[in-house]
Image (cartoon, rainbow, N blue to C red):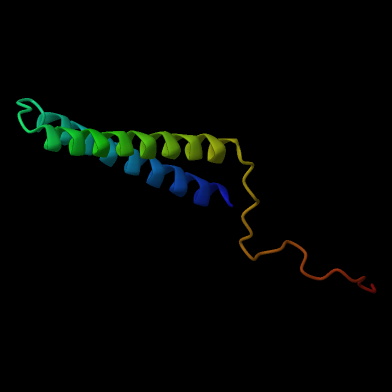
Length: 87
């Protein structure tokens, strides 16, 4: 991947993790008055799944950050002719 592709992918993963954090906050807020044990269990399962997603995203980010980017080929070459020129 090029540096730009790596940066875009890392941005997407960080954005995904931020959304999951927001989801956890909303789910936790719904448990302030836990009266229904079934709802509590369902919400805890969702939170646990979101945490697993966040951990995976940050693991992927770490992997991408250690990846060496490929050179970007802009299609231009300083010397497109590789032969010899007679003077």
